[in-house]
Length: 227
Image (cartoon, rainbow, N blue to C red; front, side):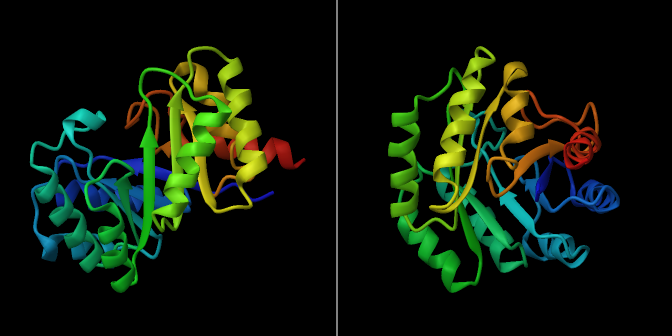
């Protein structure tokens, strides 16, 4: 059973980012998502991050209306992500609603960088039909990784998501789970059902999204499942 875990970090400066990346290496993260929302650094500094690790780095930069904290425009957000792509990041996360999404994905491919196309729902969960429609759109955009994340309002919402992952993981590299306190089941088990990876916090208290579990807690559960 392969259970890839992406540790998400949200540093306030490059120095803090380097420290957090080193910690993520220590807990053997498979991927590291670097939330660039609060960083105001240039391309040269972002290159320091990619040079510091062999773990694949994902650049994410969420606007305020995406539950992020980036204060710039959509164009400025794209320029920051493009800086990351030019600085050695292996993946760039783009929202499905991004203007000129397909053009940006083509640009990333030309740079040898993979795209993660994401769709989030912060106020509830998806039906299977909704997730199928979203996945079709993400695949059609040319995404290398398709990410669909809702918010569980009850434990049963996880079962819909896990069933969807099981049925669709063979179509693409799929990342799909529920956020929130009721979504921890799908966060934990989605890789078991075929998801490309799931997200974890570096440690308790450093969560970047509601319902995140620490990577050490996840590893402990996966160890039990393998016995």
